[in-house]
Amino acid sequence: MKKGQLSIDFMFAVVLVMITVLDLVYIASGEQARAEDFDVAAKVKAFTIDVRDTVVKVYSMGDGYKVRKEVPLNLGPGDSVSVVLDSADNKIKILARVGEKSYYSEQRVPVPVYESSSVTLNSVSRDFWIVAEYNKTEGKTYVTFSP
Image (cartoon, rainbow, N blue to C red; front, side, top):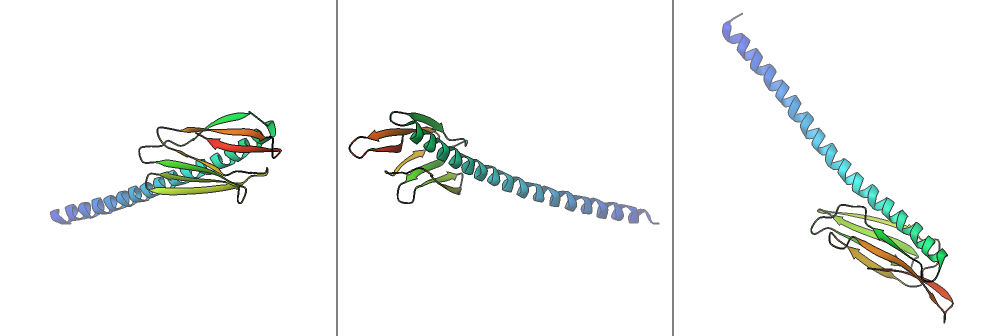
């Protein structure tokens, strides 16, 4: 075996190892990005379910009862979460814009919603109130969102 032959074999082996390592780093960074997206989507879904359950609780407790809710996401500048209580189809709809991506979740509310209301949360205002008010003239309990 010649003296130059050993160094070419060594360089070829180093290049193969570097290609393998770079490929693994590329795969890992892609998986991390997908895991972070899934984490935010899961938090939005869980928050939607929590808000739905709180609306039912506030409705059940009746006039004057209110609960403060805080968004479970880390919101930076430019991020926002829109929480809508829609009386047209009796649903809670949440649209979160985090980073450059949007996440949407909705849940059907099992109690009557007589009035639509919404709040928009951001890094400065992270919480809102879910309030029950009894309307004596109509004989109905209204549940609304307020900042």
